[in-house]
Image 1 (cartoon, rainbow, N blue to C red):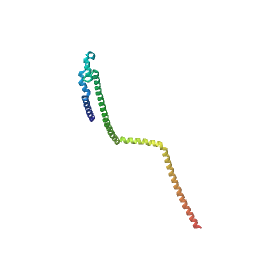
Image 2 (cartoon, one colour):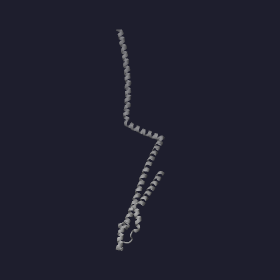
Image 3 (cartoon, rainbow, N blue to C red):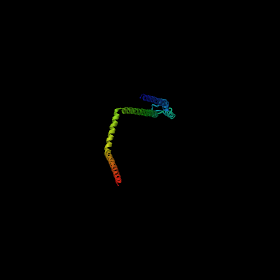
Image 4 (cartoon, rainbow, N blue to C red):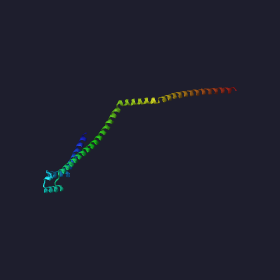
Length: 190
């Protein structure tokens, strides 16, 4: 914040010195300073013919200015000053916006990372993750629970079928061995 204030004060000072230099060295200020004392106070009609010719020549040669000319020069001069000040304000505003935006963005990112690190190290983060995981497991069970139940039933049936196959295999083996014994005794008796 101190850097921002210092930068603003420095840029404002530089801009004011620049504006004053323009005002001081511009030809408008020279015209105003050199010709203000020659503005006629009386109307031309009250002057004699000779005086009117002299004044007209002075006006043509720009050694004297009329009130209208003086007024228009003053208006132009003040419009220039106002325009410069508006431009200066706009430049300061843009600089301030860029500085604040860049510094605040960096500050927000730093604070966010810090807050996330603090939160992730706490037990609240673990509880929140477990809570969310349980909700997702419940959703999955609701969606695919019947399929899993059928798979469990299928596993039970497969196990029962395997057990039955084993029992049948053992029974067949027993029958085969008993037939071999019976055939063996018939051969001996023949």
